[in-house]
Length: 174
Image 1 (cartoon, rainbow, N blue to C red):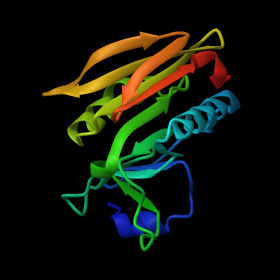
Image 2: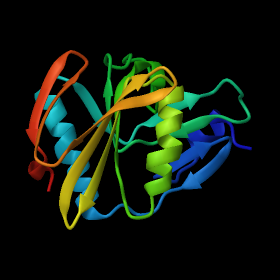
Image 3: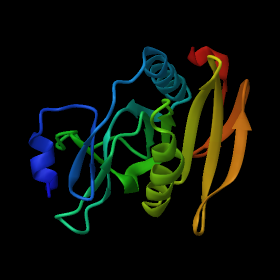
Image 4: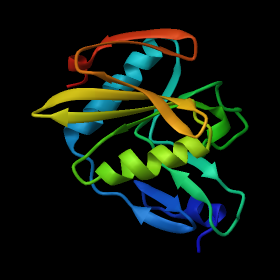
């Protein structure tokens, strides 16, 4: 089992810590990295505090079985404390997580992470998928018992995030 402190010292990137076990992610295709970068920029243009690939602590109640995921994009309630080392984000400070689904991450994104993010109390969860090179967005709002309010977008997105109306064209992500 790996603790948060041990995980913090691990030099590998694109890893997650699931129940105390380091899981190495696969290489992310260029199109998905581009989509994450573009979406981060769009969210920032709307005045939201956005970033990519945080080490997001979802549960550290058991020091021997911590759960840390690395969403592709995230939005924070407030800026991190400048005294903080910036290595980890806390679920309590996250308003939105976005996963840009790769061909190998379907079950992880649609089942495991959806459940984990809901259990951590993150208000919004988005999944971006590509069909024939065209991005599609599924958005979810947190309800008692998990995520509900599923909406599907294939072009013009118009949705509220933390009281901010976010509008953009999904085709701008490619």
